Length: 310
Image (cartoon, rainbow, N blue to C red; front, side, top):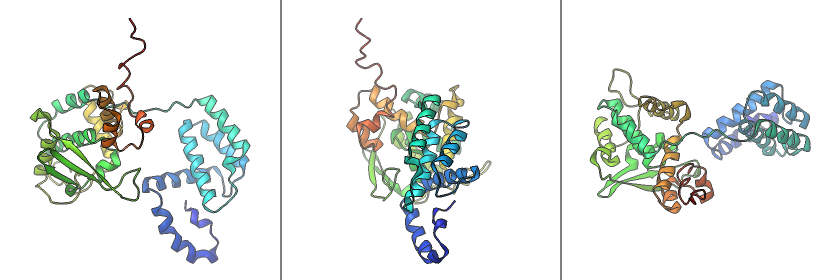
């Protein structure tokens, strides 16, 4: 559903000129989420501009099917659609806000969080992997995702020439991320491991060699069954699938894991090992300790535990 379609026909010229700039102001994944949310409202029978009663009825409908977080995100999408054209915003009305408060109390607001893959979990997963092309790729993907605390979108966006091997390890250039949509970019360092069998830098080098040592193109690529074709960039959904498959292979409960499990795992494992928050944020890219705290789930639970007085 295109918000610019709300403009009158006589503004066709303006619509065509505005579209590219408005799209670039928002991440592609966010735009897709907005479109899905607005499509849901339209399917319910909603129109823009919407009335508070229309939105409240939609919320009650959504409450029978979705969690609070999903409902709030859909309201944010609808609110944005109204704000874009200076339309009266029904989301701020007392009726909608009271309805939301009631839904939050009825459903609860606890969000399901992906279980972090801790350092020992990664070691266990790597231990059962063989030397096939797929194993080599997945080993490199798990190590890169964990050691760099990457979001899955950042992980699949990496290109071969984003890696620079140096004596201390490998420098990884992150060209754009969720919190850096303008592409300022940053570089993180992943050091060499003390144990050659678990050295991430050596793992990355082996994957590049297995691909034929390309000088550019996607770093993580799909592999056709029964083929050595590794040309197509891996999708972010594939990252979640690989994590779940590799976890299930060692008896872990895969349903609790997601593409964020590697990122959360590095943050939690580093916190458990006593790494200062500011050093963790240098890798993860979190802007503050409060944001980092959402990812450090169990890493600090036993350190200086107030219940350990005995």
